[in-house]
Length: 178
Image (cartoon, rainbow, N blue to C red; front, side, top):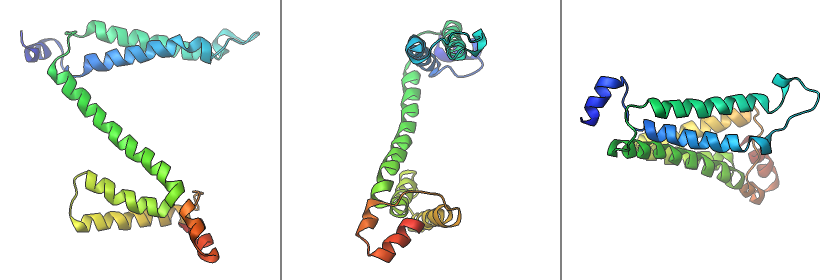
């Protein structure tokens, strides 16, 4: 029987990626459950439900049981090409987490304003927008974001190391506002 026929007859949702997701979730849940004794403790003279280990234990047992039940109830337990294609799509999300991580690392070095002006058009370009007008609007939006957060909302974001090379009054202005 073909994979498509199995999906239509026994399971109303697409099957691609479910076995992989449930398997990874089960493995992570078991690993977390195995670390419960190291990361939490039982406290003497405390009610059972108030123990620091009790609710994490309940949650992790339910996670292990739920993911095992999910795998058990799946209509198929083999990986197909569609599963790996789906997994590759999931990995694309990691790219944007890496962009954010790079932004967080760069802000203390070149400052909030310059990092935002650098990353806004870069991300807009990465998303597929290539027109100069859109890239310029992303720079304007980035400047507006910095002005809103630093100047108007007074969000405390540390100044970049690059600001140390500016003359005294200009340095203070950039650290406080950009």
